[in-house]
Image 1 (tube, rainbow, N blue to C red):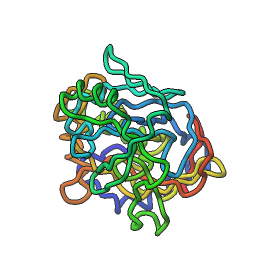
Image 2: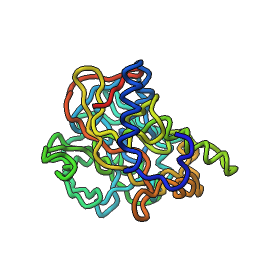
Image 3: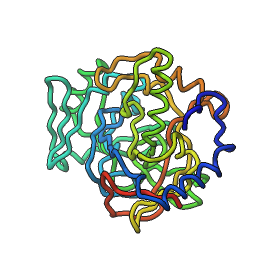
Image 4: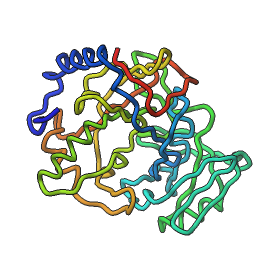
Length: 299
């Protein structure tokens, strides 16, 4: 959507954008899933996926592990940008890689010690994964840190105002099980960055779960229900407000003013918050699998 640079208004574009998307859908199947990601460690490096099952709580193992400080409060890239360099590998064991260091842990043997953790305003019980993990991450972050894992129950809940009074659980993501962004939204941002003499950025800055290709820029703002195949329906429920994490280069952990400064010129949809992408929850299709190249339609 060219020209969406200043004075963007979601309400003005909504109906006409949806109608154009519906007409396009009738002509071809060009709207597809182009990228899939999960983030096993909250704040850690993302993992690109070819396919994934869908759970009500998000992709399997997405934000399942969490770092907390000595008070039990979560730690993320917001205050520790170096976490962008921590890669998590989930197999029969659990592996965390940081530069030339690796921590390997058994998947089940450590689920014995419980600890209360705080993620934003939520307090939940989680598994503390022990002293070896605590030493590994404390050394990286140069402060007292514990590694925790989500329990099988007692998860956080999305506020019912966004879930049509349904009970929607999620693990350690900021607020919703899924985040959806269109490739065209990033393309527009990069067009604006380059015009102002700045370097383009990659999608990993925004940490989405599902990337859609074939829409107009920011068409996700106006989509209510996203359908994949015959059995999967995702409800796009709330705009995703952005913080300093998108200023962190996910390959170097270095920060700059962009792209937040550029987004501030045209993505302040209300008040002072800057929005990019849509938070979502699974309306239908738990246990189903989606994969790259799957056709997407709007309901």
